[in-house]
Structures are given as structure tokens and as C-alpha cells.
Length: 246
Image 1: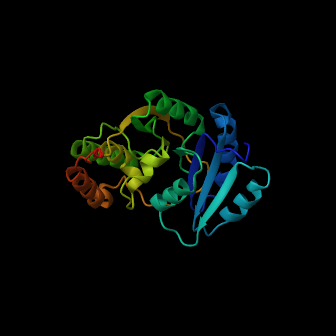
Image 2 (image 1 turned 90 degrees about the vertical axis):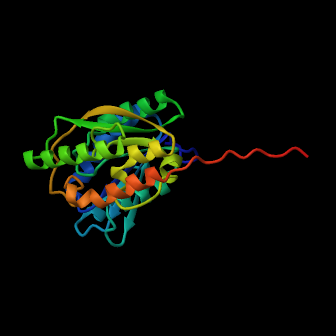
Image 3 (image 1 turned 90 degrees about the horizontal axis):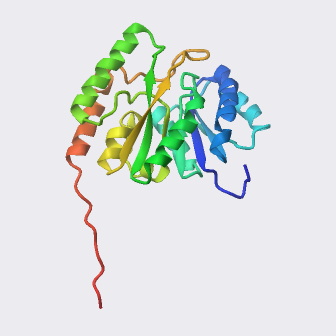
């Protein structure tokens, strides 16, 4: 990518203690995203205590399109995503989890779906099929997604998928709170944007174990769900102000 021009797409990857997964995922991103055109990748190291920082530093030596940011202490996945989006130089941002479960091969499809939907669309959201989680975790996710969809009516089957492509300015206009990334479809609609959905195939993580608490446990996300419901209920039309002629 020419360093004097802004990329078409910024790919944000939040990670915490994912050292074994970094290089395989970077290779997949590079193989998948060439068809998008110019892009950059922003890894946000959310206070890792393993070799994540060293692996990323080494990876940067041969990848001019890779940028690395670091939180001194772990602040959570939503905070890591926001740090990456704020640092992005592309007007469109893609996110995916750093454990390898999200296949980067779907990023061009999501990007194309957002562009095809026009400026009225703020988000193209991945919807996982063939889930690779265990039976209990999958059941929790289905219950949580069912309750969320019934309360928020966001028209989205699966908000837990890390694969998303969205307009940077639309994201930064959303109210920020922990777990924001789990409620993006409802909040994008709150701001007047359309949301498009793309089926994506889930995979087992490359290595290691999950490092973030799981929203899929309904009792963890219930307060956030209530808060988002309140935000939607309190939304008011923004007045359009016209100048007066002299």
C-alpha cells in the first residue's frame, strides 16, 4: 500500500494472549484481502502477558501494512476494538477475532455487501453457520440471541460474530460502553442506518483458549441489554435546521 494514500479498508484485530494465532491469521488476511485493494491491519494488544507483543513486533518487519497498538492493562474487547477504530485511516473498518475462528476469506464479501447497499447502510454483519463451539456454549448463545432479538428487534440472528464491516464515522457516532460490539446492529439502526447480513462459516480456534468473558451467558449481558433497550427507547429525531435569509 502506498503510504501517502489512505487505504480503502482498515482491518482491526483485538487480541489478548494470542501469540500462536497471530502469524497464521496474518497470512490468511493477506491472502484474502488483496482483492479489496489497499488495506491496513491494526492489531490491538489488549494487555497481553504472553509473547503476543514480541510476535507482532517481528511480524511488522516484513509487513508495512501492519500497525500495532497496545493497552498497558487489559481493558476488554470493546475497548480494544474502539482503540483500533479510532486509529484507523480507512473510512471503512472490518473487525474479526484474533483466535482464528473468524475466516478472513469472508471480509471481501462483507465489504462488497456494504458497498452494494449504499450510504444508507452502516454495517455488514457476519452471521455464523456451522458453529464450532461446544453444545452448551452454542445453546447459551441461541438463548441469548433469541432474547436479544425479541427485545431489541434488530433483525439480526447472531450478534456475537466478530466478523463485521462498517463505516468508521457511523461506528464513532454510537454511544460507547463495554460490550458495544455485541449490540452494533441495534445501535446502527438507532442512528438510522440499514444493516445487511452475510452468512459466514465458523471455525475452531487455531490454538489456546478464550481470553475474554463470553456475552453468550445471558446473565452476564442482561444489564447491557436493558441499557441498549433504554437507549433505543430514548432516541429522538435530530432536528434539521435551515438558515434564515437576510
